[in-house]
Length: 207
Ligand code: FES
Image (cartoon, rainbow, N blue to C red; front, side, top):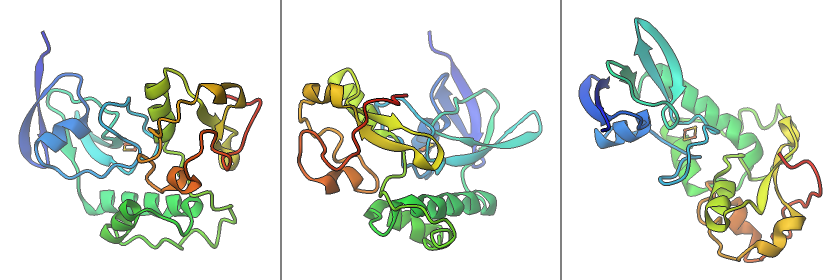
């Protein structure tokens, strides 16, 4: 039988099933935690960190990703504070480096909510605008739809990118399942194509 734990979210007592994430528990208690790389039904990935919250356990505090951190008995969670707002603001500003001008409405709303300066790091970090924040949502959707990944990550650091695995392109069912999930509009901007011609092809480097 699944146990129920009692925790405290923004000074409210919340009962939640053991094993669920802070994000799910917080949403049940109407707390507003933004997400970019999370979608109900897909495994949490913890890529964007926009869902950062502060937890207190045994008198010690730390920042964790709410979508990945499970609820615990007696946990104290703060979903908003000047410190958390500042973290989210910086995360959006960093995401804007690669997301470029073509930020989705969702990201623009978040930028406005947290007063993020989208050009803050762009001029200092000469990185190509890929319109991709590497959230991995399209890849996880692809795995769910096809039982395998036709697109995936390749490269490391600033060279990390989403690529099509050519040896697998034949199993693309053109389900377009990856299209509407992209928070920057990168995938849908490519247009309907079974083989995503504008995504780099790789023959090696699958990770
Ligand atoms: S939504 Fe939690 S890390 Fe992206």
